[in-house]
Length: 586
Image 1 (cartoon, helix red, strand yellow):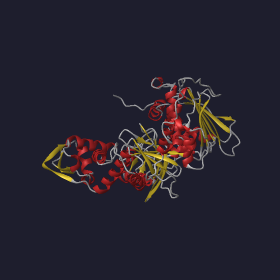
Image 2 (cartoon, rainbow, N blue to C red):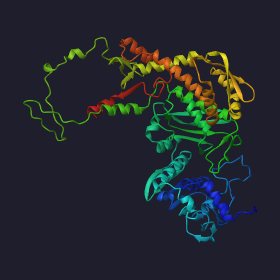
Image 3 (spheres, rainbow, N blue to C red):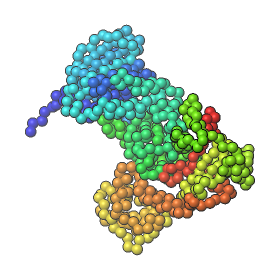
Image 4 (tube, rainbow, N blue to C red):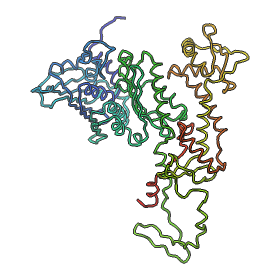
């Protein structure tokens, strides 16, 4: 077999196959170039999900005629001034984007340098570069990508529907907009404005634009520094969660990434507050020394590799847990909103009363006769409890004072601004769970009468050996047994009988994927949760006023008491204004 060098157009198409997977990939490369050029305003226009047209306009630094001609050559870049791949300060740096895009579409670039007299225009079609010509254009760059993949029809067949391709572009632009709140970003699709994010003064303002007011109203600010590592952002209260992780945004040195170490850290931090199939909403921005992270792992630059992933993971878990602990008994406002909506009555037609003809108001509702007070089935004095104070004390605690118990399950308390309804079982279950965790310390270990030998492949074996100390703290004592096996001497006493082969394999798989042995922690948490459930105040138990108030005071002083062990709220709050709206007073 004869070895030969590939033709330039084939080299470009291979590079395009690595970098340009779909229209959103091209949008990513072009917008990142605009951001690297210092743009403060970026507009993106798509047609047919980006298949027919992608147009990106920015007010960045622009390019001269010479730079424009070089920009479409392979491996030509202005973003590595010192030629050091471990000191990357820009989003793009590989010098492959424009020539790769130009090899699979019709590319048209117009650009003008600041204070330059003329703009210059260049066209590339299927890797064939046309001569540059003068053009009229303000400072910045305008790039049009037409008929994407026309030169590679096979890849064109793998594109999804225009709406699906548009959704990928929206997701990508949202991530870039989050990490650059000082830049306005606008997206138009088929002449329709999808979003128009104005320049923001703060990160929280941009997150509200992208993730919505529901998130911003229920987000906890986070900020932590550990040596040269800093972490900031916003995370949702556990009671605001989703069925998938699509609302989790992670950034490293300003670059949006999808990293298993970071995802595993988030899961570990929320482990005590959410069921395994629920996910919090968050946006985390991690800053690490550039030499400590490799951003050149993947051609599309969506993955990174940390030099010390354990330190990064520990920093994130610690920061999230500390922030969640500071939330005390708070629960998401969405819970209250849902409660208010549930109280709103459905309009129904009432039957006519004997001897009474209903009249209609101007709004079309049916008016019913108002019974006289002496005809009322419930006398007035029956709803006044002398054991409860008529007026609340001046110094009202956050969860107020108990006023009643409904169905021997729900506590009604009056607060300074309204009322709260507490699920007594869920609330006490969380209190007991937190107490059990605090008292547990290191997990008690149960020695096996006959130590069990578990065989694993070489990689899994090494992973478990490396985390031997961490596993011992969780009650699992292992040691090497030959070259391909581990000897298990002790297991967590809480777990009772365990399928050790399956457990060790699960732990090894999680260490590979997430960098943490979560299976063991989750099983221990389930046992503690079960103990808390059986030792808590049950629904159906009648409580005295003193017991109800004691429960409220414990909730106020216990971290995470706003949700049960599975992320469900332990109480809902209704403001006085909400009640006034229900009764038409507002």
